[in-house]
Structures are given as structure tokens and as C-alpha cells.
Length: 166
Length: 345
Image (tube, rainbow over all chains, first blue to last red; front, side, top):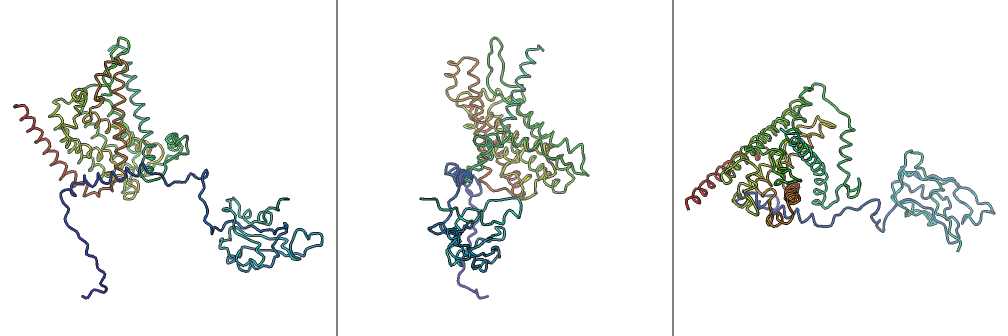
């Protein structure tokens, strides 16, 4: 029958020579390879004293950013909730009162903003969709917890800390 | 029999038993550490500095686990199996000469529990009894796979006993005595038997691997082939006994190899050391040297485990009967001829 391709490798299966049948030379070679590994440096990382570094494209916990004057950037436009494929983000918008001008950038702000960390798949689409550069995924790994309700993070956990007074 | 004699033997037995248990315990730790370093990783290092209390944690775990006895098993044999394995492992240490005699005050105490003049035969008898522990464990489990594994283990053990015995016969031709103390005394200084019997040593080493069910001959207990083998149904301390008996067997095999072929407590330059350290400390240095050799062999056992793939059952049988026995017989014949020629001149 015609071969289908011209890529063919003939496997040589010669009978074992006396040195090969004795096993001992091959065993000695194997032993030397193994013992060389005994003296090499181990690849283990001693977590939690030592942690691996994240890559530059790392997507961790979300954080709602503030601008240079310390006002929250988020305007509750809802684009992040719309773009989220796991429907993890919910928010309730509110109107800014005159005395709150130093807290929020524009007249509309998010009174309640919740992300369900168990639903979130850390894809980063909310970060790409935000027009105000308000949400970034630059936090650490989300810490573990016992109850499902404790994984719904509100604004207290998501908004970044207020800028310190210079 | 005076009370002092009984007392010194009792203390010696207790010390040797304790040492063999502690060495077996830390062999489990050494096995994990050596295996880890050979595989480019760290072993256990959380339980105490460098993980040194890991065997204690393992022992505690064994005690605390629930003891499950299968419903249709043979209750009496189920308990006897591990006990027999442990018993035959421990009594092998009775005839090994741990050193020359030390002198405390006026008493001269030989560092060997008993110096019977059929020492090697005793060791072989004990090793043959060790097969029973495995077989009883496999049978009493009332489990098809345990029984298969126990049958494999028993057939492997008795096949390699023959080659081991034949390689020892060549050694007996060279030394002329079966008493372990006299064999060691003949290897004074650096005249170790491995120089006179290299092939016998290699044969004995391979058979020791097979007798202790240690890789590459560990088909009876490998996890991938037969789940747990003959100790599948065992839990808690009975399993602990089986696993411990394997490590004690490894220790005793290393001690026997070191005694028969590597000079036991002899080392080059021992006369000078014995003259300068007296009769209480001097022999103890020989004991320390013997333990260094034993640890080297235990390390070798572990080193080989992570280097060579496991033998298939028919390859194992082929090696034991068709390769090692003819080699051992040829070794005996050649040794006899060489001795006859040397004696003529």
C-alpha cells in the first residue's frame, strides 16, 4: 500500500548487547544522573515566608481609584456591570449633594457598589470598559473565607484608601 | 548463670532494640528527605527544625487513626500478620557483631547479643520466616488483590533466597566459618571480603533488594499495580507495623551486608587507634564505623529506589532463577577452584 506521507522514521530494535543485558552499566549511569540532582539547588519556594512575584499582566483584587484631589472617580455609569461576563458587579447610583463636592468627581456617584468575588472570573473586562479609569485589577489574591456572603465585597473593601495629606 | 551476665545481656538487647527502632523511625524521615533532594525539591521541613520531628508526627498519626478490621477477615491471623513481620525483622539483629569486646572496670562485655557458630544460617532462617508475615497478611485480609500480591511477594522472596544462599556459600569457602564474629575478625584492617568476593557481593546486594521488597523489586507493595498490595486492608498501628518492619528489614540487611562483605567494625588503621584509646572507648569507635557503613548502605537503598524502574513480575522471576542462580553457582565453582589452586602453592 502506498504510504500517505513521506515522513517515516524507522525504529531500530537491535537485540541487546551483553553490556546492555547486564543492566549494571546502565544502572550506574542512572545512579550518577540521580546523585547529580542531589547536589543541585531545589526548585521549591518556601511559601508563606517567600512568595512568587506576580507578572506584569497580573489581575488580582479590584480597587476603585481616586483622582489627584482625593475624590472617587467612579460615576456609577454601569459600563463595568454591563461588560462583566459573570454578572458579578451591582451598583446603585445617587446624586451628589453640594456639601459632598470634595468626595466625588461628578454629580452622579455609586452609593452602593458590590462585586461578588465568587462570581468574578478576573477577566479584566471591567477595567477595560471603565471610561473614568476608576476600577483596576491590581490587588493581591482574594483571601479565603468561610461563608458565601462574606465574599460579596462592598465599597468599604474595594475603594482604595484616601490619599494622605501632603 | 550469674545475675550480672543476665543483666548485661538484657541491657545490650534493650539498647540494640531501641537503636534499631529509632534508626527505622528516622529511616522514614531520611527516605522522604533523600527522595526529595533527588527530585529537586525539599522534603518535610515544617515539623521541627528541618522537619526532624516528622517521624514523631507520623507515629502519632498512626496511633490516632481508626482501626478498621474487615468483616469477613480471619481475625486472629489479621493480628498475627504484622506481629510476625515485626518479630522476624527485629530478631535478625541478635547475631550481628556490633564491635569487639569493651571493658568496663573488670568486666569484659562482648558487643554481640549471642555468638552462635551458625550465625549466617540463623540470619537466613529468620529471613525465610519473614515470608510468613507477608503471606498471612495477604490471606487474612479476605481481599483478592491482597492475596495476589502476597503470593507474588512470597514467590519473589523464596526465589531470591536461593541465590542469596548460594552467594553466601562462596563466602563460606573463603572464610571457613559460619560464625559472624569470626568472619568479621578475619577482615581485620582493610582485608574486607568484598575484595575477595566482588561478584558474590553484587549478587548478595541484589538479593537483599529483593528480600526487603525494595525497589526495583517492590511489586508486592507498589501503589500503581495493586493499590496497597498485601497491606491494603490494614490501618493504624497494624499498617505501622508492616511499614516499620520493612524499614527494620532494610536496616538489618544493611548491617548483614556491612558485616559479611565490608568488614563490620574493622577499618584501616584500627590497631593504632585501639592502642591509643584503651579498651573502653576503642571498640566503640569500631561500632561507630559500622554504623557509618550501615547508613551508607541505607542511603544506597534509597538512592536506587528513585533511579531504576520497577521490574515486571516475569522479568523478576527470570532474573532470580535464570540469571542469578547460575551466576551464583559459577561463583562458587570459581571460588573453589581458585582456593584449591592457591592452597597448592
